[in-house]
Image 1 (spheres, rainbow over the protein chains, first blue to last red):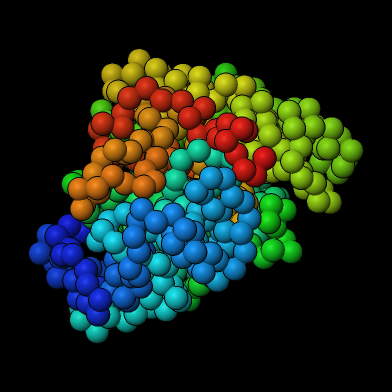
Image 2 (cartoon, rainbow over the protein chains, first blue to last red):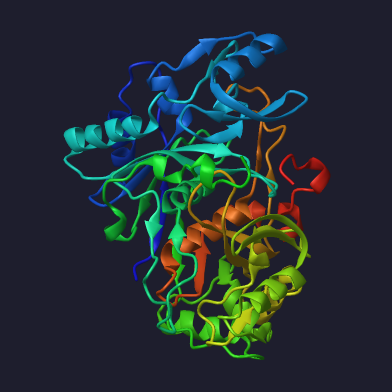
Length: 236
Length: 236
């Protein structure tokens, strides 16, 4: 079994609306001596995707009512409130704080919203890498979410292209030859978390290369696989 | 920023009560040509820790009432039930399915319970590696948990030694020099997830080396940092 490498991509410049992320990543990865290769998985943070797609809105960060209205306009359902904190469900079906509206690492007076269709955002980067570098990669768009029950944030996948989001090992025998009990692994979330370990929240590294993933996982996938249907969710 | 390497440790034999995991890992890592080094983080699955610590109980897997009684005896609080599935809180404060009682990859007729004190289990491995190989590593004991809202399982940390479980970046400026909004990152959970990507549920690789973590994270930590206090938890 080969090892996995998680390589931060440094030197990505500030991203502006209509920038082509694939070009920026191909150039930066080549410059730092780790050019992209077939079978790599690129993890790209939501923030630069939202910036490239112009998902920025003007807001006075000191205006609590305006912040609240923005969060509600990005939510289809509010699950919990406590003080300024809102836990809500987005149009995509993700449950997270403040509907993913992000005021950090964007210009003062603006907020970044989640991409409209994060799978399509991931596919755009993937197609761009193919066009610019002739290389077939998978792409995960990641964001930083809290969890019920556990303290601390982890990065998860909100968009996927060229990677199965959930790998189903049901029916494969365990090491006793019996069926496994629980075996649907959210590999796209684990890939996002692995990438976060080399990004650093304040270090300005918005992209990482995950190299060495099981090639059988590199097939069409969607972050919709990661959304637990409400009817099947005991906590929604 | 250096890259991260996630290296599966193959060739660990079947683990029995009173086996010394540190010895098995040091030997297997050396044999495969990736000897442990200072600053490595070892991720060890709960299953082999529970086996080494004799946390196995006899149970007839077809006896639903006995399974239910066992899960309840390992729980301090049941949050939800649906059919055979119980979501409960363990003595450690972890919320998971079936209180972490595991019937897969153990001998027919027995179940593996969570370690009594997983931080201590991690410390035992860490101390053993120091004694057997003269190397200072961090250790994470990992288990596979489901999540609210998101489909698919991920590996998380249930025990930690020599690694901060949560790294608090609050107050460090973002790339605009302003304070970050949300910045407590559950790095121990992300390390466990990264390791899972090279383990494979049915492949019998119960240990991985994570090499290249930020050295400032390698300090005393506890998986208790990962337990969100009930009073602070909107979903318990």
